[in-house]
Image (cartoon, rainbow, N blue to C red; front, side, top):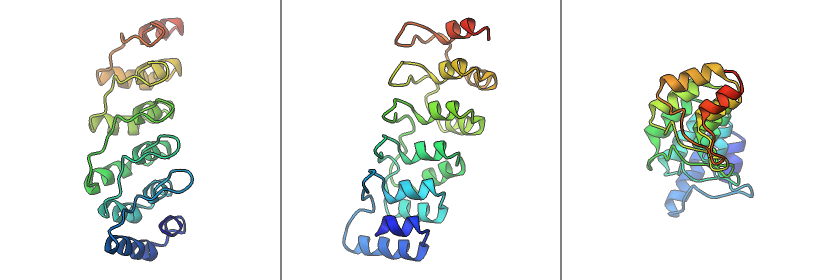
Length: 183
């Protein structure tokens, strides 16, 4: 029922279901068939008041859906940078900012793939590991930016201290990839 209240954006019912779950000492982190919690749905729908309520009811920002995406991954995918502050202000658990989804991407890799410099800056300011490699090919965010020929993102990451000499699983570096693309 809480999932349905979220999807229908019914804040009154969300609040009532949260109160009932608290009385019954039940977690608000119930999963639907896609392994989404009510918090995942609220993030996808950008329902800030619902997100606050769910976080204050101890909804876990680090739970993953069927794709291995946390609430942070979803906020990045849906280009909702303002939600990151909400997560930090209202979450009862520490946000695991470097978590990889099942494709091996951290939120930073996703922000780079979306060419979202605002999100990249926010994630870096929040302490995401700029040089963490993806779980599939061992490429850093910088390597992905080079391969995508995203020059502004490459410059941003280098300015923020990204290491261009980290080897991917095939033994190549971002510098090698840049030379191959004449960047």
